[in-house]
Picture 1 (cartoon, helix red, strand yellow):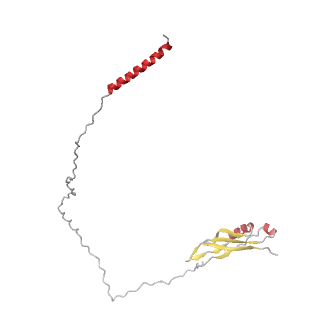
Picture 2 (spheres, rainbow, N blue to C red):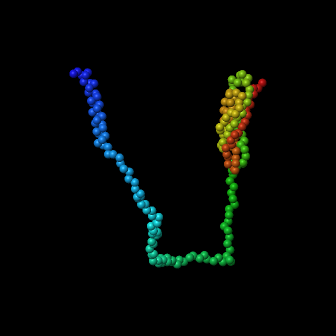
Length: 202
């Protein structure tokens, strides 16, 4: 019998054996219906609503100590005090002689409160290039006057030409002033302004 003839006969037999084994295993594990047991018994539950008494906590106990005697007083020693001698009203007292005051000569000036006043003003140098071209103009300057009378922070506010600006700054930097005085002391004066005009003569 060849393999082609055995195959149709073996497959049905294997299926029958598999089904038989499945039914046998099911019958072995089947325990049948389980009866439901009904009961009216319930587990008793008790609730205690009463609170056990608790003893309150007391504070710390302090031990009473017997009072302590105060320390003995400090001994003081008697010291003789000096008593000024009484002055007799009959005695005459005179003040010591006072010399006449001597006034020393003072060559300097006493500073008086007031605004700064110019003492030295250097004229600006007319720029040669602008003079040759016949250019005229003006320059508004602002600067500070220090307590020593020198100018500081010199700057040009408005100039018609950059050449006039440079010449004006160099000139104002060489100016000197009597400084501003307040309460007898020289102080800095800020924001002084002046206008320099550049004109060519005939």
